[in-house]
Length: 486
Ligand SMILES: Cc1cc2nc3c(=O)[nH]c(=O)nc-3n(C[C@H](O)[C@H](O)[C@H](O)COP(=O)(O)OP(=O)(O)OC[C@H]3O[C@@H](n4cnc5c(N)ncnc54)[C@H](O)[C@@H]3O)c2cc1C
Ligand SMILES: NC(=O)c1ccc[n+]([C@@H]2O[C@H](COP(=O)([O-])OP(=O)(O)OC[C@H]3O[C@@H](n4cnc5c(N)ncnc54)[C@H](O)[C@@H]3O)[C@@H](O)[C@H]2O)c1
Image 1 (cartoon, rainbow, N blue to C red):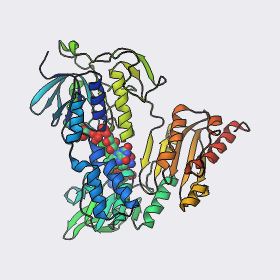
Image 2 (spheres, rainbow, N blue to C red):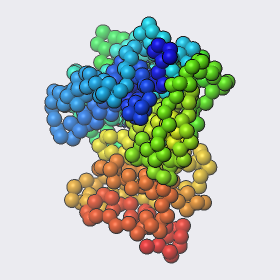
Image 3 (cartoon, rainbow, N blue to C red):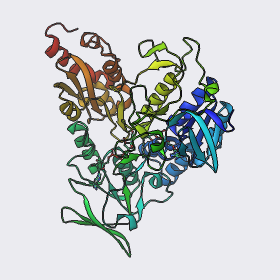
Image 4 (cartoon, helix red, strand yellow):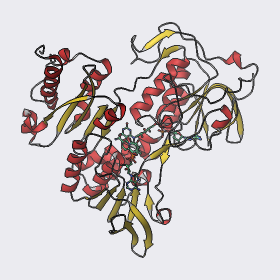
């Protein structure tokens, strides 16, 4: 047995990497996890958890100091010792350092070469800074710094009006920063249904955020008092700091993936098949001689590692897939989110343990945790158009629900989309309180292709926002099924 040989090396210890390593180690595989920053990765430290903590604090009217203290408490002050200890308890060997593939079955980390039979790439994504003259020399934050800062800038320019920009603009404006948000598209959340971006824009404007839509920065210059930004519409802005939330790209450069025959295109991420196995452009070299004694163990039939998988989405036990390259999470460039990273991680684990499972991306939620919350799932009107799907849409204003009257909240709307040709739901968008909770029913309906006749027969508790979907569902059913509606 080669020294430092592992059945599986997982490169990147964030959301996806942690789940893959733990589950495979629990199933009896020899697993090494390579992480160069913090075990746990982005969500608990620099993304969803601190962001939603700060947003939650704004809703409770907490002071900035209390919000920062609460944020730092929920992130554990960036101490990953507890997470690392849990990995060790599960039997995972944690290797600290920047990992780089050094041969067909070899990875170099911390001055030592480790051999593997399978490699799982879970390296996440990194901020993409737009090519603006002078931006790199300016006082710039990415979302990382914005979610670590103990200080409140007086004047903040947020560059990019999608989830990260909208959430962080709301956080900083709530605590008194003078925020200007610049977005190249003519709407916020430009890939979602237009009403979502419009309702959110209204809410952000009402709290004093200066929205500049359809505008890009043309030049940035440091000044004695901070930074001056020239805009494509001829205007100019002065600020203390620029927060760049203009997109992220899969982290696949400089990993040595070419040595495995894998095409590296940072704009698109790693191409994976439905089992989350990375596609290779040329046959990868064979595993080193002798490595077959380290095969990933075959699970007992029915001993599925994923409590959430079902007979419908998990196939027969086919024997372990071995000697492969796999990927999960942002690195695949598919709908980046924590829940998608976890889902792909489970798909990888199933297939590596010999239980065939294919990922289904039809009903992956997309949420912006602002007030109001924006929830979208499945196809948006724009993505349906791009795919040539003829959508039938029906909507309802939340103001017409009894719950809105009770909560004294008159904003918000839900729209539900059916595929006219197939007569099933394929997407939905909702803006309003707790939409990320009560819209899960629609995610299930899309994923399961639940017949509209069943959906219109579901009873919702009164008074809830969830009732809002009843009218549009009935409208879609009437238009698609005629009189045959519950
Ligand atoms: C501001 C912000 C807010 C967000 N909020 C939400 C939200 O509310 N809900 C949601 O679902 N998603 C949210 N996301 C997205 C979410 O954070 C990501 O989709 C998720 O973290 C992806 O998980 P991952 O495992 O692919 O990557 P990560 O969690 O980023 O983990 C990748 C890990 O790999 C490590 N790594 C990379 N290269 C190497 C290497 N060569 N060697 C060793 N280690 C390496 C990194 O250090 C990192 O720890 C947010 C993102 C941002 C930026
Ligand atoms: N709640 C969540 O789930 C959540 C929150 C934050 C981030 N994220 C994820 O993190 C990733 C990054 O989010 P993001 O919002 O930074 O990126 P994004 O790619 O979703 O959006 C970037 C935005 O910046 C704009 N932009 C780009 N260049 C510009 C320029 N030069 N001038 C003006 N506008 C410009 C784009 O038009 C776009 O609207 C995404 O995958 C997102 O889904 C998720």
